[in-house]
Image (cartoon, rainbow, N blue to C red; front, side, top):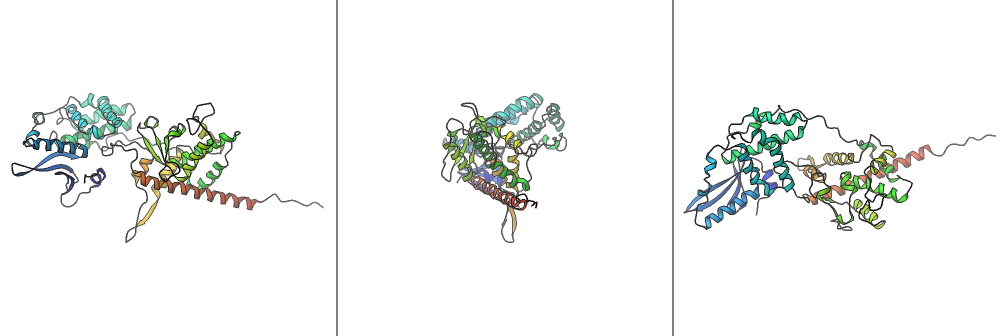
Length: 428
């Protein structure tokens, strides 16, 4: 059975080296120092030999399998695949750009196309002008830092960090191939400018959540149909953790499996921040909202605007929150932070003796939020990844929202009973 990427990613070092088989002689050798090396065992002329295909994750499983296929073909011709590995260019000094191109060509087929293009564009724009013509073994930490400083000077601190990460990945590939002996980017720790503090979107503390849900349920505008659309849009954002743009332009044909336990919303890449498809599993409560809107209207958009054939306007949902009294206290984007905090704080008891572990893996949460993933290992993006556990997580969240709504209703009812009707004063 082929080795899964998650198995390779999570393989932890042990006291002694061990192998993870991929099949047909290919395996991943996990070293005690944590390095993971692709190897292929084969026999030629009666002797057992081992090919080296580089280090994971610089060399992905897909690339290693391609190399295995080439080696098998060479063997079928009666030739030793090891003899074909002697590359005259590899024995001479190579420039950073030459190695970067080989690194990118080696991995791009296993990546999402948009992600691969972003990485190469960053190389061409920021890295190659500074380092491209230098010999790979002659570049020292100050040269890499000088390149990073140019990016920092224009205020692009996130891009400067990604550029440093890319340089490091090129060097790891070069080291595995024998073209470099060390990675100068590893010496920049502490030298990069710190990121400014992130201003998070406003969100309520959980103690105020029940009251908010009661107010949302009673939200009304002058037009009853507009009230339904606005309430449903805000509620749907809360239940699905999506961004406003992704929700406002939701189309009826994007929903699949309604009325079943496998209902989902497939958002196309052109509406996503990272320009790749995103799949949202729908809880029973989210499905109910979709079905109600579909039964009460027609047209292209699930959340239509006031003008014919238009979608919900950009400010409709946030203005609704303002009218409810939550200006500066809660935003639509803040729902994502609220839900993420809830998911990351859920713990379950496990094992004997008992220990507390996270109920929802951080990868499930990040995938549901459709966050950017620039990491080398996770570059190969699957829109439906972790769909089953995410579906359970989203149903648990929807049930929690219902529980908090009931808490808010009970509190409102108790408050009305305590205050009661105004007392009448008898005059006689």
